[in-house]
Amino acid sequence: MSVLLEVIATTVADARAAARAGADRLELIAAMGEGGLTPSVGLIEAALAAVDIPVNVIVRPHSRSFVYDADDYAVMLRDIRAVKAAGANGIVIGMLDAHRAIDREGLARACDAADGLAITFHRAFDEARDLREALDVLLGFDAVTSVLTSGGKPSVLQAEATLGELVRQASGSHCTVLAAAGLTVEALAGFVSATCVEAVHFGSGVRVDGNGLAPVDPAKVAKVRALLDATSR
Image (cartoon, rainbow, N blue to C red):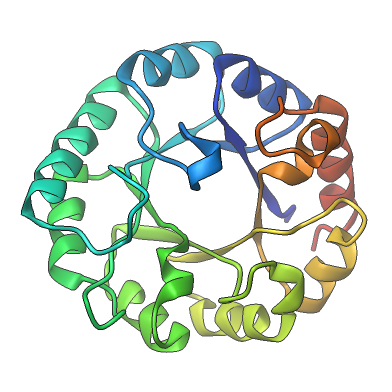
């Protein structure tokens, strides 16, 4: 089975380029420089119309923190319903409490609003006080099908051992560990071999000049796709 390739798209052109070059799934976001915020309904609808692969949409109302108040949740739940109405494959969300544990109540409300959409818990996970404990909580939510993580480090390449442990912890469950942040074309084959990850997530690594604010480079996406197919298990 080939490793799943998810690519960040911030424009319709990104979405088209990544899909044509071999991405399996897109994460649609706005504000790449802030780590990704909820995109407009217009962008969501246009991106969905432009590609035939699944599109997951980030729902993140601001970049201040991953601890949200009642107003933030009201906004997020509206956005989740709008994403579902637009016909997206899933949502990408994450929330912590003041003690840096998964906000179970907030996540449960988001799952209810998502009403069957696939849910990826994003890199708020990497700020949790205990990654194994946090993954255990997420494994208790049937709706959470992926967890996006760099193993708590700035780059996933600094956390191979942790990623391998998380992959083993999630093994056989409904939830896939989605390795993200710092992945490069050059390091990819060794990383996949060392960690046994079943899914990888690329942002800057498949963009022109490695610049997160630049367009997707289809040649880089195609190279990643070829590498992943060559390492398929």
